[in-house]
Length: 280
Image 1 (cartoon, one colour):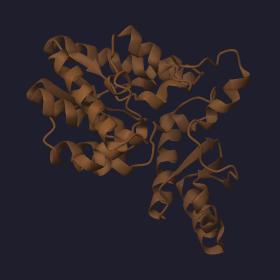
Image 2 (tube, helix red, strand yellow; image 1 turned 30 degrees about the vertical axis):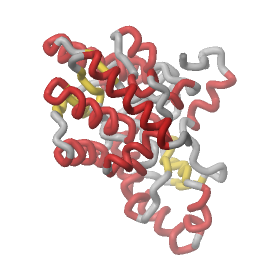
Image 3 (cartoon, rainbow, N blue to C red; image 1 turned 90 degrees about the vertical axis):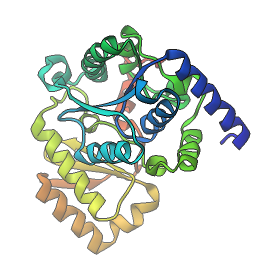
């Protein structure tokens, strides 16, 4: 992590960049990055900064509540729109470019809002996001979306530190992603699958786990969990509770991935495929 002076310099650069835009529409999921970006945009631009949350089948209810609560607490100008990526056949087909179709749907809506306000669309991508496979970045480029956190070189750890200083409750939130990211590529995305995944992850959270994913393999739930929680998950009583609750969520079989949680694990197979390219 950089020293406090370096973080402060980057935050000042972020404020100057946002001020230069004049007016912004923030793609606001309520996670660590977008919450921090929305807060700084609000400080710099006031009412000329609007944080917009896209409510859809792939967006967890917990994140929806978190986004609304944070916006209310910090006085963000907050709007909710409804996106319908599941209506797009290419999205449901769940090829490796699924995120492109999701972001295209999102930015189609945000571009209309931005045009009405003569605003710039900004998202929460940061400097650490440059290396992973992120087809959604192509959609961002097509719509002229800016990534101010990345542009001033802010990393995830720096954003967490600055968020903590600002009093944002999201500062230590685990990394998050849409529910569709739990479904292996080329397995169709359906509302039924998304609801099953959401129920299963709610169950794990209720059991006290914070960092995890439930990967959906039809009737089998493959749980990726933080390595530090592995021993606890394997305790007989806890293991029985996990199996019971995930079967109640809709799975027939429950297994624990011994590699533990890792972000974007379903991208691992893409590294052997010619469709995999590094995001710029």
